[in-house]
Image (cartoon, rainbow, N blue to C red):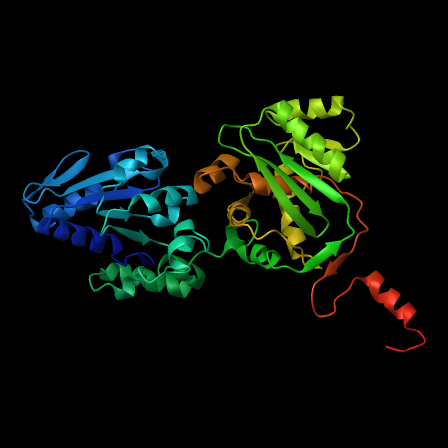
Length: 418
C-alpha cells in the first residue's frame, strides 16, 4: 500500500511499474476502483499516456483493455460496486489487482475482493489518499498490518519528479491553512469533527466495558427493512447502556410484528419506537391492533423535528441526541461492534439555510458503506422522544458505585466510621 497526499506520484509509479512487469512475463492485471461508470473513470487513460510517453510499441490500447502483444499481459478495468459475489469470481485468476483511490472502497467491496485475489503469488496493490480515520481499506490493511503487508507513506516532498509549481502550492497551503495542508498534501485523514456528526473517538470510548448493571427502563428502537438487502434491526437501550441488537433479514410485516410482540411481552419495554416509513406502517398497524398502542410509537425520519428551530427533521434530531449522549456523564456503553462503529461514524452533517442541523441522505451513506446503516438508525430511534428515566448505572472497577449506593453505605457505617 502507498498512501499520502497530492502530487506524491503514487499513481504514476504504480502505472510505470505494472507496465514494466507486464513486459517481462504474462500477467493478468485488474485495475479496480469502487465506482466505474465508464472507462473514463479508470486509470485506462493514465496507462495509455504512459505507454505513449515511453513509446512502448509492444502494448496495444483498446477501448476496454490494454494488451501486450509480446508477453500476452492484459490489463482489465472494473468498478467493484457493480460486481456481485458471482461476477467478481472472474478476478480469481488475476496476478495483480491495483486498487486505485482505495479511500472510496466500501467495506463490503473489500470483503468480497480480498479473498478473491488468491492465485499463488498474486498481489493487491493499493494507492490512496486517506479520507477518514476509519476508511475501510485502511482499517483492514494498514491499521494492523501482517508480515505480508508493505505500507509506505508518499508525499510531494518524497517525489523527485514533483513539479515546482505543485511545491509552491503546497507551501502556500501550509502557511495559510495548516489543517488542510496536513490532509491535502501530507496524507493525514480529515478531522471527523468537521464533517461527521459522530466522532470515531467517542464511539471507541463507548465500546469500553464500564457498566455492570443499570436500573434504567428498557427502550427499544426498531428500524424496519425497506429494501431487499436491508436488515430489520431491534436496538435495546437502558439509559446509558445499550445491551444489544437483533438483526433479521427477509422478514415480512407479520413476521416482524410477531418478533416485536414477543419482545414486548417478554422484556416489557416502556417504549418501542419504530420507523413507520415504507414497510414500517404495516407493522405498526398490526401491533396497534394487538393492543400495544400504549407501548409503541411511530416515527417518520423525514418528519418535522420536535425542536424544528434547531433540526431539519427528526432523523437529524435523533442522531444529534446520540452524539450528545456519547459525550455526557456517566460514560455510556455500546456493544463493541465494528459494523456499528462504521455506521455511526459514516454520516456527514451540514446546515440548511436556517442554520438547522441536517444529515446527508441515507442513500449516500449506503453507497459509501455498501449497506444501509440499520443498527445506527435503530439506536437513533431509542432517542425519538423523552422517556422518564430515574435509573442509575453501577460501574465496574475502582470501587465506583451509584449515588444511592454511596449514601446507603454511609448510613450503614455511621457508627463504624469510613
